[in-house]
Picture (tube, rainbow, N blue to C red):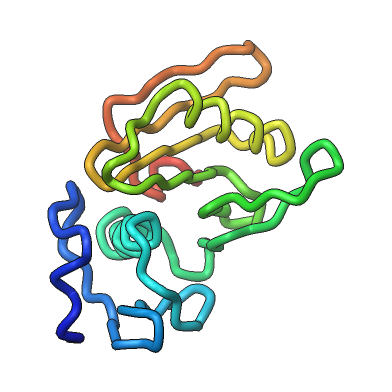
Amino acid sequence: MPSSTQNLPSQLNLPAADLSLRSGANGVEVYDVLRQKWLLVTPEEWVRQHFVHFLMSHMGVPRGMIANEMGIRLNDMSRRCDTVVFDRSLKPFMIIEYKAPGVRIDRKVIDQIMRYNIVLKVPYLVVSNGLHHYCIKVDAEEGKCELLTRLPRYEELVL
């Protein structure tokens, strides 16, 4: 493990992740197994890598059903969803938005992920700052949203 890891956010409310780290020219880098490349560790990237590991190792999400930094077009502007999870037919069914541990999950963050859902129309939205995680079930037909008490496992969501 690189010697400069003391600057990384340490206390996340997620299980420990077996991440590959190295010292890079600009600081500590982490290997993103989904994008198959080394990335500079920022507080938000640290949360993303831990959360993706959590999805695969603890929530039963197959690695091939997760995409990081998925591009979308929203109002003729390019945007990127932090993480998108797909169902077995490869249809997006969950968008996940990450923030750094010091960033409060507020209405602005929820509005951001809701805007992304105008394009993808998924039934589940998740926001996390690594400390607090919120899962919202969206019923587009009824025009309702429900804050769930826990993040369901993949097999509970994908029938």
